[in-house]
Structure formats: C-alpha cells, structure tokens
Image 1: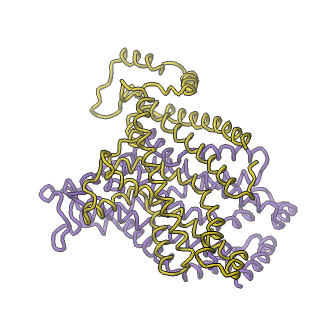
Image 2: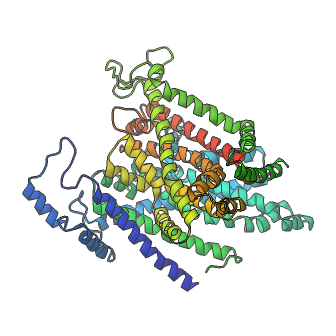
Image 3: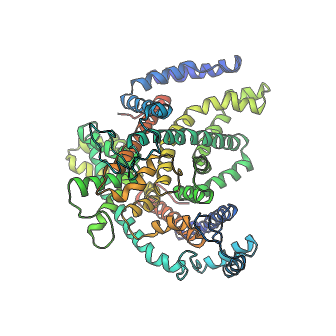
Length: 310
Length: 308
C-alpha cells in the first residue's frame, strides 16, 4: 500500500511539470506582455524603463532559461512576486486567499455529500415515484445549469423574494457563507444523487438483497446494512471529478458573492497577465486535483476489498 | 426484444455493406428516430432548441430594435405589459427583448460551431490513435492524459486571456480543450472495431486504410460520437456564457446572454430582471440540449438505456 501511494505521488511530478510547461508556452507564445499594456488609455513606459523592468523580472533572458529558473524556484515553493501587486509575493497572496477558497470548497463538498447521497438513496427506494422525479429534477438542474446561474437564481429567491439572507455578498460572518456554499454544491449534489441512485438500483436487484428480504429483515435493515454498504462504492469514485467541479466553479461563485478567495484573484491576474499568479493558481489546482484523485483511489480500495490496488 | 433483432440485422447489414460498398444503415437510424420521437423529454428539448434556432436565424427580423440602440430617455426601465419595452431596458437604455433575441445567435453559434471544431480535431486524432495503435497511440494518449489533468475551464480562460476577446477565439479555445474527450471516445471505438470481422475482411479484400476508416469504421463509431457532440453543445454554451460573464468572452457591442448577466449581476437587488432574463434563457437552452442528448443516447444505443 505504502509503495502504491509513493508511486502514485511520484507520478504527479511529471504531470505538474507538463502542466507548467504548457501554461508557460501558452502565456509566452501569445502577443501582449506585462510591460506593454494594450488597453487604450494605458501609458506605455519609456524603452529604458521597460528594459530595466524586464531585467528585474528576468524577462530579458531566453524563454527556456526563464522556464528553468521558474521550475527551480517552484520546488522550493517560491512562486515569485506578483506583477500586479508589486509589494506582495505570490506565496503571500496564496497564503491569504487559498484558505478561504478551501473553506468554501470543503463546506460545499460536505453539503454535496450530505444532501446528494440521501437524495439518491431515497430516489432509488421510491423508484419512479414522485420523490424519484423530484430528485432527478434536482439532479438534472444541478448538472445542466451552470453554478453562476444557480447563484443568481439563489439571490433572487433567498435575498429578494423570501428575504432570509440580508445581503448578497462578502465574507464577514457565517451568514455570508450560506449562499456561495449552496451555489457551489448544487452541481455536485446532482452528480452524486444520480450516481448513488444508479448504483443503488443496481444493488437492489441483486440476489443477496432478495435473500435478506426472504429471511425476514425489515426494509430499514436491508437498506442500511446491505444495500448502502454495496451501493455507495461507485459514488466514491466520482468524488475526484466533483472536486474539479467545485474548484472550477469557484471563480464565478467567488466573483458573484464577492468572496476574497483564490478564484477571484485568478480571474483578475489573467486579465492583467500576471504570469507568476496564473502559474501558481494552475499548478496548485493541478496538484490538488491529482492528490485528490489518489486519495479517492485509495479510499476506493479500502471501501471495496475486492478491488486491489496495483 | 426489438433490440436483439436490430443487432442481428446490423450484423447482416455490415456484411452487405462490404458487398455493396457501404450502404447507409437505414433501419438503424430509422429505428433510432422513432425511439427519439417517442421520448417526450427529448421532444421538449428539440422544440425549445428549434425555437431558439429560429430566434437566432431571424433575429434581424424578430428584434423590435437594433441590439445597440440606446434610448437615453428610458434607462433601466422595468418590464411592463403595455410600454414600448415589454422586457424593460438595460443600464444604458437598450431594449432587453431585442438583446435577448440577438443573444440567441451567439449561444447557438458557439454551441454548434465549436462542436464542428471539436469534431474536426478530436475524431481524426482518436481515429489515428485507434487505427494505427502502437507507439502513435501511446504517445497521443499520454498527451490526452496531460490535457485531462488540466482544470478544463481554467484552461479555456487561460487561452482566452492569451488570445483576447472575440467569437473566433472562443471557438479556438473550446476546440483546443474540448477535443480530448472525443478523441478518447473515438479511439476506444476504433480499437474495438479494428478487430471486428468486417474490418479484417475489408483489409483482406485490399481496401486502403483511408477507405477502411471512412467507409467501414467511422460509420460504425458514429452514434457514440454524435451523442458526445450533442452533450458537448451545452458545455460550449456554458463556456461562452461563463467567459462572457467574467468579461473575457464576446466583445461589445454584440449582446451575449452571459455578458448581459455578468454586467448587471451586481445590481441584482435593484434591477433583478437584468441578470435574471438572460440566465433563464441560458439555463433553458442548456437543459434542452441535455434532454435532447439524453434522448439521442437512449435512442442510438439501446444497450445504455435505463433498465427499469
């Protein structure tokens, strides 16, 4: 097991290097540079100042050298200085924004699991009943409708029509957490409910369930002891893609609800071509995704002993 | 069951196809069509999609005002039943209804156009990997794995930030990121088809690789590809809306639903209708394409149909 984990973790490194290389190439192969703003009202710097700045940030060296320098620094978790916020290191910006994004993400994850799984179970037990249709409606809505749209619907519903939430944004008190968490969780709730329902239906049809009923167990006992145990394995595999859904959704949700997280910084830094910030966000996200996938694979092996990790 | 019968005739037809140099599998498609027509949810989706297509095509005729005509005497007017602007006006006094109708053009164009690009990149690469196999295959698939490791939407945003705003660049960004799934799917189909008797027979009969791929393998791999493309459409619509929402999608003055929602979302507490109308349309169109895709999948591939 330890060997398996170690090997998987080692495999993450080439993936991250590939990601960083592709990102680096795309950013440098396209017109526009942080030294020459293209905005119409921008005031171009004198050439001498441009050269000085280029030297300061190492932009005058050949590209491959810039990349290697960058790569070397990354290994010491030094992401350099942000171009946009001159006085702050990217590492500092990350240190203040990443916890907020993580906090939001974990709350959304928890909500998605706590609502999605029961929803799927209820739908599977009442197959083709009204509850099932309601669940599949929620699931379809969650999967097919983007979260920034759900976020706006939520604002209209919970702030304007039924004023339970006093304001639409910020991150000062727990009341501000409610809407972004729901907006971010609805999609994953849909995904989880769909998967749980499908796998529960599959298990309910198995012979050992019929046996359990035949020996006189109550519905409750059969569902809790036999069906759930076997039916929850497939939903675990989609926790990985779910992290992806929550992670990619957060820039939009963070923007709408004015959450001071990493996602908002990402969008701002893209527009400003803040290379060090862009690279850092994509790398952190890629690493996060890769590690989550490993954890999910390990969990999968623990929950279902029939699956052997190799 | 009917599905077993379809499989049998499918087999027989593939033999025919060899002899008659590829006849279309008419019964399979007709069978699928009748199944699709019987699916109420898919039909609902299809009708909505057709309505939006009509809106997009006839926007210049249907829209009561030009999309960029600002009426400064009627700024930020709420929707009324009787007034000049039934769905109200936006922050600079442009007619909401006209802008919503014109916005259909962007969403439909991106949804369908980007899928053409995805098809043109994804299918040849997947077909090549699946048909040639060996080192070419493993090289391409390694590349696909790396692309998968990217958070897709962030990658699209990155490309858009690099290329700048514009419809054409949205096509490119979705094309570059979207082909991966389709290539994987096509490759898997081709790997399975490569070992099938009718392909081996075609090869033995001296057909060129080009002919084998286009005449024998591609038609048989087509239905999962069509399904994947249909599901790609709402994804592309979503991507455009998301990009325009954060301000790096469609440039002014052309209206896009995502942009209309993004520009006005901060005023939602006072002018709720401004972001609400375009978001309802995005949600409706995406749902319709999803229903249609579900229906197509069930119709084209009876094996994946829900067992109830």
